[in-house]
Length: 613
Image 1 (spheres, helix red, strand yellow):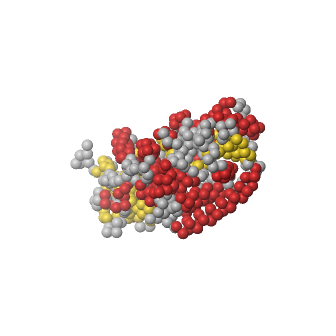
Image 2 (image 1 turned 30 degrees about the vertical axis):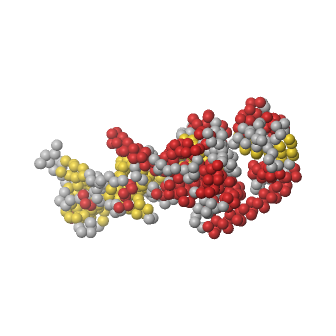
Image 3 (image 1 turned 45 degrees about the vertical axis):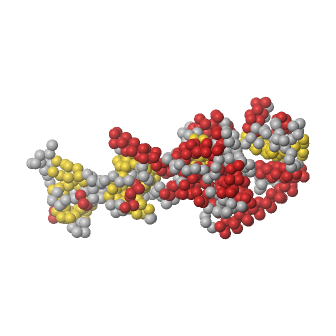
């Protein structure tokens, strides 16, 4: 208890500013430095005054603690102080009465001292200040704290802490930034209260709008609950500044699916605040060469994520796989990722294996609701993107049609998506865009080609440049395809199987140009298309093979390639057999020395498959 006869000395908390200082009161301070006319004293990190040499009572050195009385606060903000020598006194802390505000409301608080409460989602040490990224229920905000150049401020504050920040709202490089006076990690009931408040609000904020698919489809209607679940997880990752890695198969279908989601996520990141380039360091899209998540992919993604975690204090990412991720071939990579507890979402139309779901937090696949691969990844990705951020619908609504023709879908939805955009894009235009994507991605290799791909898909509002680019790419692709077909077609070996299927084999290793477009998979597909046109009404299977692989394409033969691969793996010891894909389109790998045995066993299984009449 403080009695009337006690002498009161005040200590300003870090959040206090000039308005909290009163003339005539005595405050604790620390010597900051000296001048010929006196001594500078800091009352806190933000406020200092001058003790004129005539008002100094003793000799001091820097960082000495002193007591000072405020003699005068001048109109320009300068404070005249007088040193006090008091033997017995009581200290009363002056707390800044900063009202806690939501991050979303900071734009109206520029130049004012405020308090925010939220979770630390990133801690980045720069050559100057330490930058803390704080997330509350309404948005994301960068907080700059400075001790000295390159030195970590508030080292006790860690990633994931719930904190209270007190500081001044400033504009830096046309971006809002809080310059922190104090950052306090909350604990106990106070932490629980804030965390609970944020969790409840974020859960509601992340809930996607209840919108219908672009086209009428029983399969898409049945998938809506899982698509909404996926969209909610992605929206929450954006709102909590969790990095996102999006992996996709490097073909037209996979690209369309991924780019639709990319547009939704990037726009939502920009709407949610953060750095001007947050969409680049919080989101990464990367193509996968194979239609599954390879060891090479997870290795690259982990290396990227762990470096950013160590260097920039980022959270570990949410990983989204589209047009891959559903099959046993993905399992080895999931096992590696599970060591780091990476959360995975899959949006795929390959035939799923039940063993995979234990690694996933959500899984959209048409086979789960009675559909099949005719519902392409591009269709699914676009519908999920609309749930993530409905504002992007006008610029992505043509992507499902491009994906449908690029992946040769025969589902009823193909015609519906084409009809949806027929006033802007013909079916041939969609085919040209799909071919341009395949051609450009071949040269991009592992790069995402973010801006080039936007031009090919006409997402930048530059239709003339889009048309010119697609025309040039299609001409280049067709020239190389025709050159490849001229080399391949004379070497196709035909066979008629016992089920009356017409089988065609082509050794793409020795009868096709290597290391150029089209690659073996697309080369086999182009050969298959020509053979189908030559054998109208007949069941046709094409196998393009090399030393240790085979690519299968089928029309009218009801195969199940994933099942065939599993059977061959068990039936041929030492074959080293793996692979998969869709039911009638896929690939198989094996050891080179077993090629002839594996191919003959594969052909036998094809001859046992039923054919459509």
